[in-house]
Image (tube, rainbow, N blue to C red; front, side, top):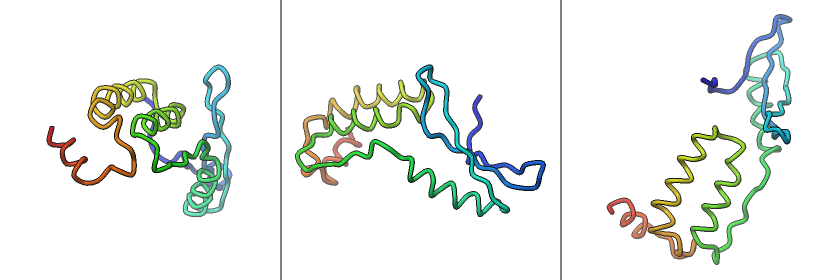
Length: 121
């Protein structure tokens, strides 16, 4: 089972190393970059900055977009960041529940009433 967490550890030379993913190879292997520092907190702060810089595929949401489009964009974005089984589960939830009930709704029309109706049904 894969580890969960921040991927920060202390090296034998006394420095702290933090690793973050920048993508995947064509074969699907994860590509890592490393950050080094003198303390755990220093590395953690650097990792937060680096991860935000490498977040790609930022989706610009327009008021004319519908829930189906945004759901599919989100699935595309998270595909390389989660396990395959998690991705399949998320896809099934979106296809069977969200798109069926809220799929044709525009973002600008989404409000607390629709969300409450969705949750209660």
